[in-house]
Length: 270
Image 1 (spheres, rainbow, N blue to C red):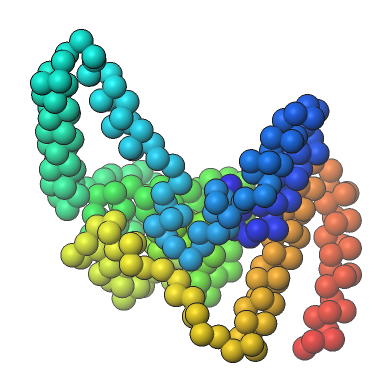
Image 2: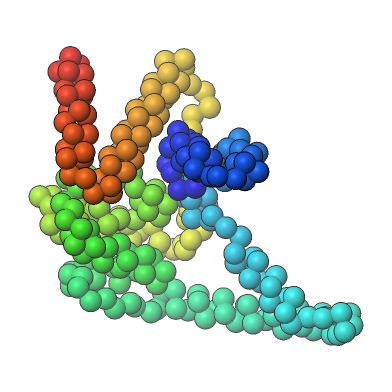
């Protein structure tokens, strides 16, 4: 579901089919998942931060569940209406409380630099939680032995960055332990300005605009770009699969073969 390219999504779905020992379940996956990945997978939502955030109908189902739990056919029509109104009033009260906390409350966190915390506190409460989580995730990356990602700009293509348009753990990692201080005062101000007069509704209008009028040359260039994205993702997925196997010799052999394959291409197209 969370693969960013179609080829990566279809590859994992095919692996699920290949590894499933029950033919009826294999056919079920083919029929309900393999042929319509654009309807449920996130590769088809990369143009819209809002669609990347809303991946389920849980909030609506929770509301319906509460309606079912507190209403009954024994209540009669008037009793059922009273129960529905009471539930709606509770939801409105919760909404007002959340709206108040949205601009007022501040989160606290351990292990995050003071200047970063001070900048995070300038965001609305839900975004503070998101940013704190990403900043704290840097420690997990360090514990796993991962180095700074080597970013030289804010152009990170991870799911969080595409989903929320905010600094991700890779940007925090580079800023705190890398060579480039990406989160300058001006950069923080740019992010904070997004939410000065709005909340999550800002994502409703922030989409990657796709040009409907494209020349044939532009279409081919776009197609080539996505082909490179898919190839890169396939290589990265295969590397992590080999790495997780725990066989250092096999991992080194993979990297060696990859270097040997790529170097002639890089040299030829300098």
